[in-house]
Image 1: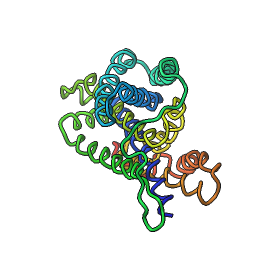
Image 2 (image 1 turned 180 degrees about the horizontal axis):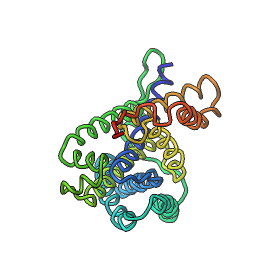
Image 3 (image 1 turned 90 degrees about the horizontal axis):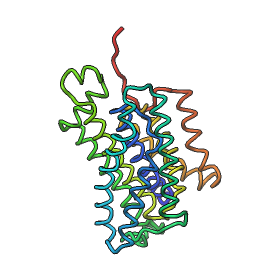
Image 4 (image 1 turned 180 degrees about the vertical axis):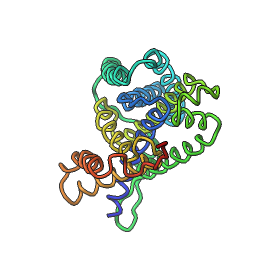
Length: 286
């Protein structure tokens, strides 16, 4: 049971971080970014490419996250900001188009063959009461919690307060002198960094391949649904919950049931509590 829980939390940490990235952008710009996982995959391939030219794992990851911030802000400026005055539908289509464009670019530049990250903890394992626990799983879980903690601290800074103000009421925030463009660029930069972390975590213990983003974005959106697309805590806990449920169902029901768990969870949640299980109650005028 312990091994299954640790494995579920490992997978769930990646889902939770990508869900947080989705919610950060959704709260700040009101855009459901379907290209989030593909953008993170680009960052993961940059990190892998840096290790291929001789950098060790941690410096390569650090440089790739710097690239992620620049890449995310550039995508927002070039592709999303021109549509800021349009309805939700064109921006939604733009994120879907970005998904296919980035996926095609990855295939073109890196190929479709699976690649392996030379992470320093990849093959390290521990025997805990007769059950094998990998150091990679522990690092992934710890990193997920650290990312969530740092994000919580960020939202207490002045930039975080500006993001929250934009999310609460964009018109009033503009009247107070908050630049929606700067906040949007920062949100996309931050979201892309987090997506890069999620994809690096998800692939450093397995393999890096173009197809991994599809499964991850689905689980990320399901986790975001559990938080009602507004609650950071809800999105994070939702990601962990999905990972644990998947692993337990694969171990005690059948491996084929794992792929259906996320869809079953979102089906139940939308029927039972459409605003999200962990969504915070918000006051409104009547």
